[in-house]
Image (cartoon, rainbow, N blue to C red; front, side, top):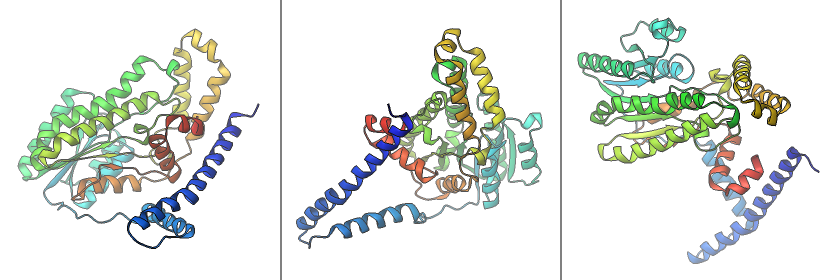
Length: 361
């Protein structure tokens, strides 16, 4: 019997051939029919393929079309999760552009490095605040601080970037309910909690809500159910909020980053080792017996291999968040990711599940 990887390879090749045949014969036929309807000369197969390829290149390679920019002066932005990763880099980036930045840091009161480095900018436009998005009291206190600061400067809170998040891994039967609750408490309820707290200020400014989800908010994967659940929910929350805020002139955007493990350091070999030990130790005995140690170690080896994967810098994510904040007509969704992840996301969200399951699982 053929191995699973070999079967997947065969299926991917077969799908590619099928797609090529469809594009090579079906597309020209459709285009010719369309041309006849318009009373224009029929086109050739070569012209169809060239046109399709040109469209693909334009879509992927063309720089974002300018849609006008808002004025930065007098505008403030609240960013959560500024201790490390995207949040830390974004705080410095937006500050450099001229925004007043309220950088929410989980570890400010504990002397966290990220908070210290932001404070060391010694700028009256960089305001580091203690902010645990799971703590109602801290969220409310941060909002009061923002109101006081804005009242003194006559600026407005133009945008909130809900960036704070946690990630983990583990198969469903190895993952505790406490883990599911913790991940959603930060990624989902934290996003909702902060958004609700600042929405009156954002609404009055006709500003922006930018929620950082993930490509895993659009597609699932093995061993990622706690994370996927939370990010799928962030996508749904963002859609509902966008519909409601349209009447108020508030734009809501979702950022769906791909694999930025290296850029953010969100997954390291030490984290994998610690999580693996917790998963195995806390798993029910019958689950460990049924799955077996070999299966478990194979999955942990797979997770270790991810530690050195992904894009090495976060520039594309920062650019997309900046566009969502500054563009007069921001996109609903931004998907900064490598091409193969983008293709996979399109396949898994637009083709029948039976096909995507065969191709990827």
